[in-house]
Image (cartoon, rainbow, N blue to C red):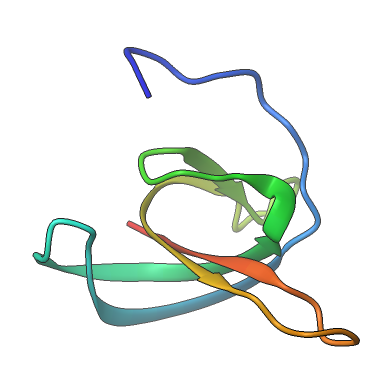
Length: 85
């Protein structure tokens, strides 16, 4: 939140490149190009800048347009689902 981005950090993540229509926090519709799943404690917010496929020819940066929280009882992991622009 604010005029810039915080320090960069590396997170373990699952990335799925797929276009889908999502609803953002303000209720508008947007097209998401990728879905990234990260650990729940990652605390990623809408507007964050995310780099996917780092170090490959498919590397790109995109901003988070929506965040969903999925909490599961053990032994299943809980995580955040980030929808990227």
